[in-house]
Length: 112
Length: 113
Image (tube, rainbow over all chains, first blue to last red):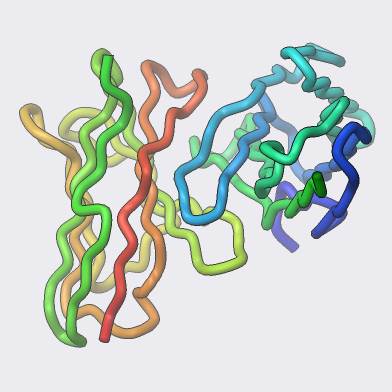
């Protein structure tokens, strides 16, 4: 299966609740990034976390990285209807070339 | 400071025609990446280029697809003799180095009739 698998595939929550999305990958990485994509639009970069970092914050976003488990999580606190989007993790392999691998994404729906 | 520009935003072609997709990276970025996204799926890497060089084209079909990033001007993704299966959104991203964040353009939506 593909590197950078997100779960859940879809998530529906109420405004104000927290949303947690997970990403697993298979090979060693240099860094892992999270992106958001609103329907029919381009991707917006959220956070980059390097392989030697364990946690990173940006506003209401918190990303963790566990290289021993080859997994990452994205937490959105106090969600808003405007957070409704698809969220993708992307990994840059540390060997074997330069390509960035995207997962299939988690579709988040925040109900007002 | 304009972001990554892609044009056209929408492109309709009949089977057998050629499609040319253009990408102008952010100012100061010399690394360009092309991705394809099918509906309800993630992005699939196609090709990574630096100025005048193809670094990694392992995600690009060997036939009908080509990419270039000339010394002057935008990067071009060219699809010859398009088929219905080529219908997708094609995204371009750029970065200043190969270890930096990639910034994405708005994409070109190709529809093959």
